[in-house]
Length: 220
Ligand SMILES: [Zn+2]
Image (cartoon, helix red, strand yellow):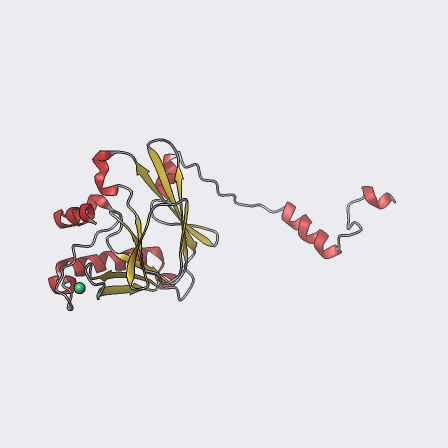
């Protein structure tokens, strides 16, 4: 009976379970908390930032008409040979290998080996945030930047990067190079099937926009 007050395994708890719980209680954990109203969060997660087994990205949207380029568009996905338009919802999943992009924000189709999750939260009357969550890129994971004809979805151009091997800097290097090649080659942007010319590609980084990219961003 005096066992109740002594430290050590209790009835119903094996030695192993007791040791595990004791170890967990004493662990030095690095807790990650994010205050969405803190400018530091916007800066740290403006691209993607590793948190344990996940990559987290935050995309803030202000209700400011002067920042037209970043206005909140729909999410587009290519499913069953067609472009499906998804209005913004609180939670949105993208399965692996489904081409997807956000209107006005990403002027290319992203094709990921992994599924992605996006959560849209309203922070105030003028401020919203999209929380992007995906697995930390493991070896072998590939990302693709792709363009399809805007009229007939004929594939035009694609670049692939093994993000699990080269990491995020490698990912962005390939993305930037893909844009440069695609935008400077009219023949790549011209559909071989129907002749439609694809507008210039653009990235989330609005401040780098050329005149052609500004026009493409506003139109699509
Ligand atoms: Zn076409």
